[in-house]
Image 1 (cartoon, rainbow, N blue to C red):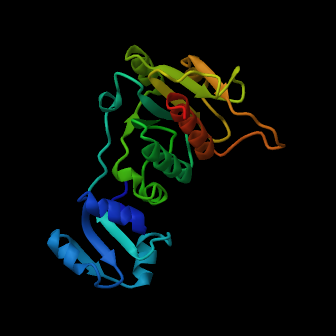
Image 2: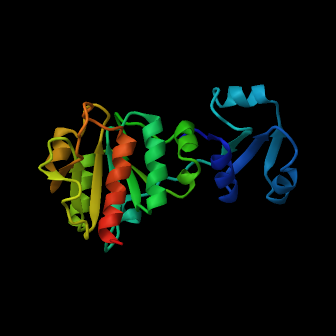
Image 3: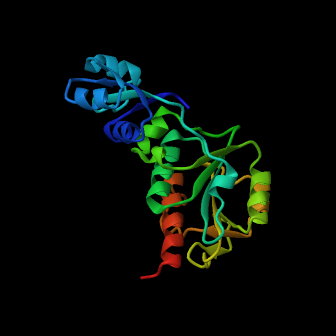
Length: 232
């Protein structure tokens, strides 16, 4: 990923996790903290931060950080009640950032996306994730179908989301190791990925628009799993 993070939340989470190599700030209010943590810092003007963040909403905080450490499949597999989110060809960085934030808030074990023809973690994703990237486990794989087969062999059930689903998302009992698949914007799940699904679920559409933003759909599906597992 890019070695830049910006925005207050992303900056301070990276700081707390000791990932900052050099901090760029507008004033000297944090100099004591930087010196205490032995972090290089530079006091710059807003125009410099605008340029470095490509006019992103940096909120006066930007940092060069150590490379984000990707996780492995084995690190996110659980014996019981695991929950993994798989992104099949997602293209929008804002969707990826929002999904990572939701996954971290919900305690999802890991997020998987493929190497090719897919959005990847970068500085914009880190900003949208609002610091969640520091804690999320993200796995990049070359072959999504083989990855799903491995997860099946490890005891996971594959639940895809698609308008063609026979079941509504609330119909499934998620008291099992679960993989939730979110398809790409506009195209949905690929044919080969769909073939690996044990269940395909749909969200009810009552209005004239018949699709939801990918990150919104992911949030609904993820928290439905939590609600099913922990009914109040």
